[in-house]
Length: 142
Image (tube, rainbow, N blue to C red; front, side, top):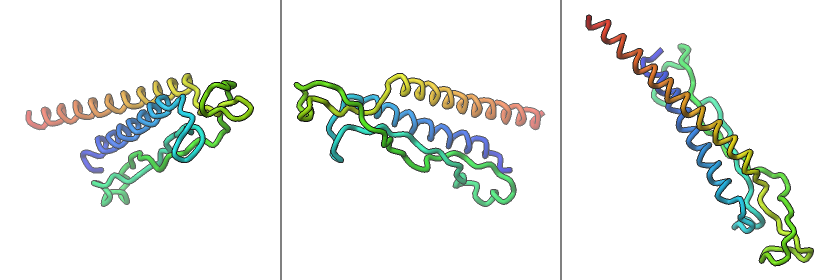
């Protein structure tokens, strides 16, 4: 296994979790957006993670090297929008209801905390790996 595969794997996880947090922030920022270029209210987005080959170590994959994590795509939530009665809103229909985004701020905050914890765990893994390599080098020098 290559020497830096653990760093490559954790690094890919850091990038994936950062992307997840960016989508969550986008969802929260658009919680009141009733008009989009596609038409209708904003729709909640979620990332899809998948195992990917670390580019730097493709030659080692047949020898049992680990894969990293990457963003395979983004899923747009197709659940129906929330209907809120507000006849004075500019986007209200003839019945007085406004089609609002299907975003629950509590769910988004729970997802943000989970992404943050996963990010922290990968930072800790990188830190521990670095310390392990430093100690091994110190032993080798002695």
